[in-house]
Image (cartoon, helix red, strand yellow):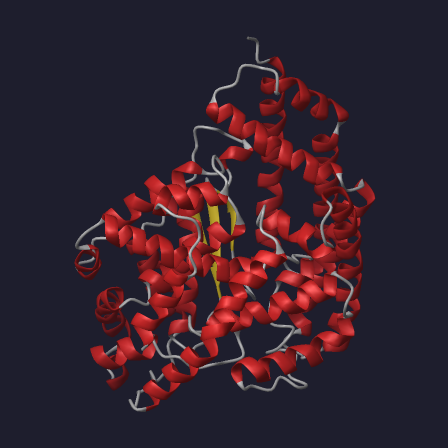
Length: 494
């Protein structure tokens, strides 16, 4: 049977992907390179691009092609792509053009101002912009919720993690809450018995950058299709053919930037290994934000903080920065596996990390569902930080509710992806270890090829061909099981 309608859709989505490519690189430039004076004009240009993509995607002809393509004789791959095309179409069709433009402008303005407001601890200035972002996010959530028959927050969550609900998150996170405080307390108490020596700086930024590039090379990053830069908040952007990752440096703190690079390299390897055989098609995109985070946390936590990997890393650090007591092997491993509750999520150890995520999830859900307002955020943040980690953020907005970039552009519903990603990462690493006898020995010997081949085979090459649930079932033989994450933390820290 003729596939005229399906072929029209693939041509349209190839065109859309090219516009997305431009938007992605322009956004990277805005975060990493653009002079401050370019902010307003860049925001307007990106908003224009958002409107153009929205117009193309929501044209009624696209809807007709989708309806007709369902009757065409499509193979499994084409059917999966059509499913993803329809999902993208329906997501976009729910929103008026005016809202898409307003959100893009408000997000650019809020993010750009945040870069100077955060160092200045200027909550009053930040909250004024955030209120507009929240107002527009609530409008979007209301439209999506009405169409999907769910709560406003669940409607936004579905954009990032389709088929996940706050009810299921409450169940998963409730389980974590039942054991995490005790595990955290025991891990801290156990480590207090061991006197650790902190690395003594300064550590020149040029050397830190070279160390990061060396780690990226060891982790298989393709420098012919990507690069490393600096931004106010580490991220991975760009497109599979041109992946941009960033970190931030502190001359007195050696390992934060390095593990930021390792984390973002996990994202980058996933992007660089997505299927190229379906150019411009939604099926070739990463499956979901939680699967994306599973890859970065697989690299940073499961692999990067493992004893085997740290033993490989230690000589490279000594070679670049010289020997000091902190770099003695036993101390170096213990220092990189220390559990120390702190203010900053991106620098958090993996035991206290879920506390940061659950705190943000509970606040953003209440915010989008209209149970609280922007002005309530600092007080709630302080209350939850004290309850979880025993830290006060009263008046300390910079290291509290202003530290992340996600809310500045309306990314409500993203934060749960981090702890879901940690759960997936632990389950995937367990499956890889089962499938690859001698994996730890291979890592210790610096041979990461079998591990990356396993990831490519089970996760990377599939893009969005399968649902998240099916992808994990295929890769590990079972559905998401949070117990692997719990057992991993018990093994490593207790």
